[in-house]
Length: 146
Image (cartoon, rainbow, N blue to C red):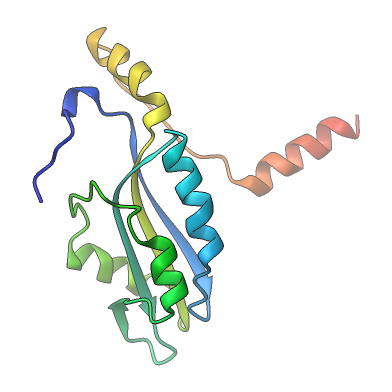
C-alpha cells in the first residue's frame, strides 16, 4: 500500500517491541492502543506479531485467539508495511525462547506540529533516548525521601 501521509508533516516515528512470556497477547492492550489512536496521540503505521518457540524457531505470528485478533483489528488502517519479513524475523531472533512480541511502528502525532516547526527552522534532532520506567521510579523515590 502506498504511503498516504505527507512526509513533511509527519511527527517522530518510533518502533516499539513489547515482549510477552508464553505468547500471552491480551485484548486489553489493543483497547489501550486504540485509545491512543482515537485521541490523536499516535498513528499506527505498522503492526505485527512475532514469536520465538521454546525450541528457538522464530516466526511472524498469526494470532490464534479470535478475541485478541479482533481487538487488534483495524488499528493499522494506514499501514504502509515499513517492517519487512526480515525485520520481523530479526526481532524474533532477539527474543528469549517461549516468548512473543507485539511490534508497533507509530508516529508520535502529538509531536508532529513541533517536529515540522523544527524542520522548517532548519533544526535537527541531536539525541533522543527513552528513560526506563524503573529509572524514573527510582529518581522519584529518591526525591521523595529527601
